[in-house]
Length: 348
Image (cartoon, rainbow, N blue to C red; front, top):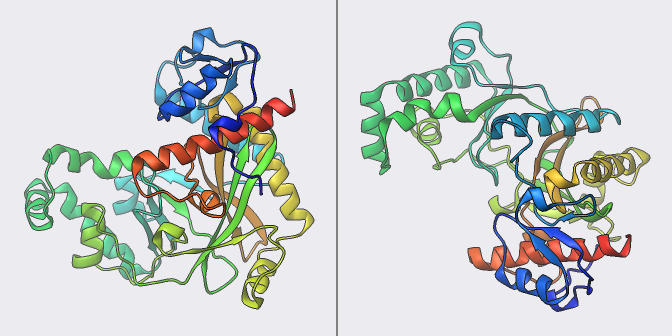
């Protein structure tokens, strides 16, 4: 596991061009300038040697942000497919299909605009499906939405809730994992072709609770789901097994074995993630979080999602860097970017 450096450990440069956008700790910006870097935030000023500390914007590439994201998603999936790693069958939620044609059970309904395990619902039984339809029916009705807003303490424009389902949600094939735990794998990679951090996340399934949206409220209070939570995030009480730590409790050893860790298959997965990140380094930025899930039935890995602004808390905590506030989170995230930048410069 690569040690996270402080800003004053950044190597000096003679005019190296670096691209910064999004949430940046001002101290990183000042540190880069003081060490001789040429910091740009306009993609038109980038050169072939520019290092993208944060992801580039879609400006001057595609006509819309949606087109840009679609092209990037397709490119990343195609790159991983070259190594036999695909994404669970996923489609945008269609209310017509939900009501008329029926999705195949079981499936995961997920809000693509949420993270940390929020708004991910396992629809497993016919009763779950009926409850989902009932909840969606209520959301479509303006009067019921208004009542739900009052009951649940929500505020906002009613039309926002009318569009909520069709704009945000997707339906994804359910992948059963090889243990009693909910498990996912997080790889934190750098465009320097390094693996910064790898951990298998696991959590005992717990009764389903989600109060982050009107849909979550309805599925918990009015039309409860029979399934338990499928989330493994540490922010939701999950735990990490750091890959490569060397010594684990017996049950964690068994959990790693069940996921075929320490095998050629896993090494290939890591190399594929690093290769993909390097190929799309300008679009992803200098660090990226890849989330994978292991199919117990097929004994293979699937890509769940990737993050251009990955959470670095688990990685930072391992090195005694803790954060609670948003400002501290941004600083920790950009210290990881600084670490990746230092690794990149070593290889150029």
